[in-house]
Length: 117
Figure (spheres, one colour):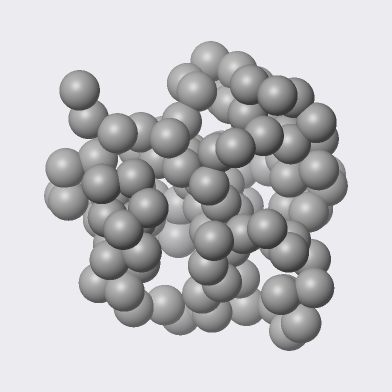
């Protein structure tokens, strides 16, 4: 069974690009454009890893992350922050990695392989 990665990013181009990168590397990918949409998808898909943008309409990434980690079922899902925002390391201190936009897809895949296989 393929590992599942959920992409949370309001930019449809970045979201689709990440999903293609993950699919091309043997992962199953799903995507959400906002925090509320991500919450619904989280319940439905139960991903093995999440990539998370910080600045999004409706709900910022850190708020989604705080809500997600309050649920014991989802609290241990590894999160990779992918953002163009400055001081992003202050937002989610338990993220396994922080990548700046634009990012190196090979570096991202390496982090994912080291995290979930």
